[in-house]
Image (cartoon, rainbow, N blue to C red):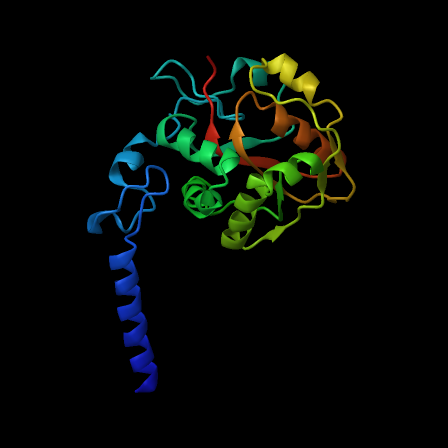
Amino acid sequence: MWGGGRTWIGQQLSGLADFLFPPACPVCHSNLAASENASDFCDLCNDEIILLPSGRCCCCALPFKATLSSSHLCADCLKQQPEFRSVFAAGLYAGALKLALQRFKYAGAVNLDRPLAKLLLAQIPENAQYEVVVPVPLHPSRLRHRGYNQSLLLAKILADNLHISLDQAILQRVIDSPRQQGLNALQRAKNLQGAFFGSCRLDGRNVLLVDDVMTTGATVAACSKVLKKLGAKDINVAVIARAPRH
């Protein structure tokens, strides 16, 4: 009886909390209607989250401009296929997803980690067989400035839900390269030369590499090269958003 009483009290307190502090959309901060409570985002923001089209590169997930295009390797991956096998992305880097990631990454909105990771989990095949989740690391100076590694926050949730181990020590960022914004693909690749270092052997394990946004793919390509040198067998990449190429 006491256990049932505690459950009833908990329900009443939860209902009171929802009344005083109604659930809000983490992107636009509008109160969620009762019909929206099953989702992490309001209907308007959900509508602005654009899934990647079926016509995209089967390796780097670059969306093709032709709307009726099929899935095949893009020109860059045909020229030089990356060390990773494929990329999973929650959606296109645009609209509400872009705004959410900017707040998550630069404005300290760490409460967005679970809603964003939930979107990404929906795009990862249930039968995927990974043995370790590895987040893209930040340089220690940038980590001190920001206070958290957004990729690590996402990786922790993915590892918990996929029931596989998380290892944040496999990769380290040893060079604090200049910011990538405004650089083209070649400049980004040169900017990251020697930036990452690995110290552990992977001995044929399958890796899920986690980052927040993939633009040209230079960051995950550089990380994948190091992971391959450490003995990784297959590397797949999971990002919240994939940017189109302009």
